[in-house]
Image 1: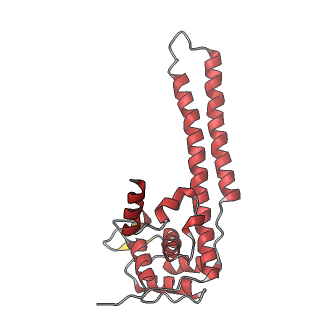
Image 2: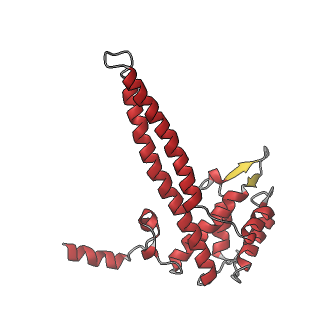
Image 3: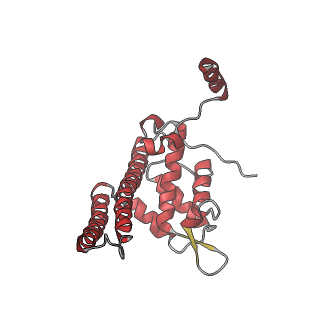
Length: 214
């Protein structure tokens, strides 16, 4: 049975880069949710006005209002794209581009996938060979059940890596590991993901808290 080891994740350059990625992705999610809510509200208004068609309340003013709101939807969609581009664009490094290039066309079970992951961490002098972190990243890249949307097939039984999403998985899995080990503090995380990554209280501490509450 193969033995795996832990990795020293307290590398400032690496954790800074990993955290920058996570913050960017979180901001993209936040912007997306905010605009989705605003667009949904306008669409609901359009649908409400459209129901007046054929009734005594239907007139040119209602039609004009619908057109204005439809234009507003388009404006909000363009505004969302611009804000994402301006405030939530994550620029790839040479190592990121090299990682994606190395994975192009590979099957998930190809040893070269693991080599590409190892080489990405080598830029920070972080050795992930035979580590739990490498194992988790490879599982995320090729995990057909948990991460089915991250891979595609080439028409045969083998699964082909999606290099863009594989890079996302490398960052996200490493981010989770850094938070778990305390290399990135959970307390400073945005509220949108704090609960997911916040340290779970020990059972004894939980019981003590319940006693105090009682």
